[in-house]
Length: 118
Image 1 (spheres, rainbow, N blue to C red):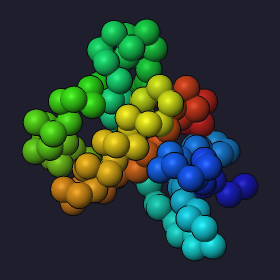
Image 2: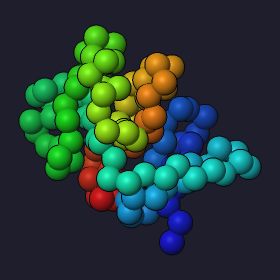
Image 3: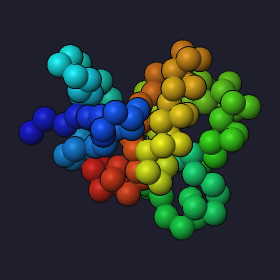
Image 4: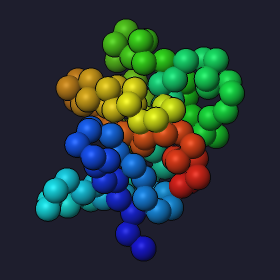
């Protein structure tokens, strides 16, 4: 079975389709490319209260508003990094920001979808 992220409508939100087994390919239009991951670092960008309500086991909580101030800390983490939140919107914003800072990361979308895929 192939595992990939695909765009949901026209937004920069990615949905995980299939089981997360350490190898994913992202599909963008007609261009497909593999995004190889081996036991990625998972960062949840929801608020601490949301995180305490449930999260992916082993994930790290760094709220979206703290990401810019913690770029150095995040860049020192084992890469690749998968970001998640409640819907994929905040993690999408964090992904774009971190990529602009040279960090190898991907938007995992909703923590519930990601959790069910691991």
